[in-house]
Amino acid sequence: MMSQSGRITPERRSENERHLGSRKTAAEPDAREKAQLLQWVARDLGDAFPGVESIPNVCGGEPCIVRSRIPVWLLEQVRRLGTSEAGLLQAYPTLRAQDLANAWNYVWAHPEEIDQQIRDNEVDGM
Image (cartoon, rainbow, N blue to C red; front, side, top):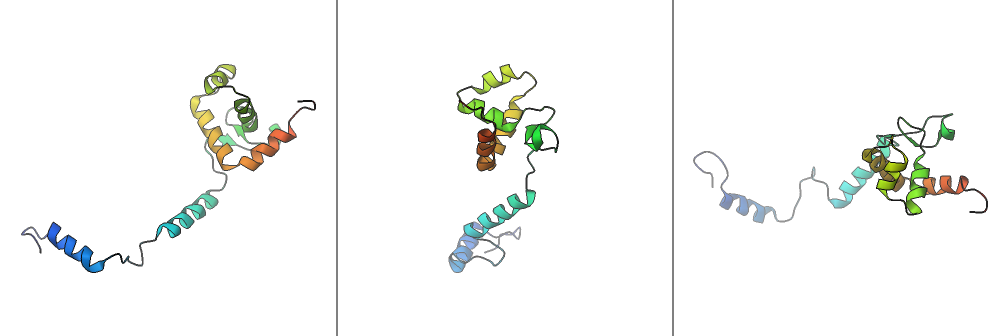
């Protein structure tokens, strides 16, 4: 049914939904297709992490917080050793809370890389 304003009434909408059942239009992706699309978008964005940059010949090209030479792996290692975010911000006064959030996002997206950088930078005897 159409209302006088030309809009579909709730009754008509329910009738249409019953008629269509669970069918989807070809343009409506299912959950699996949506997940695949998100993976493609993430892959295409590559290493686009705001607040984190890798520059050749700066800290060995390791990802660092922008405006600093503080490597992401170092922040993650210190966090693993029990330092709080407040402690990190106190120890590195040039860092902001957003810098730490950017670092943790990078760590989450690149766990193997960060683990390897931590291992590569460990001092013998630790």
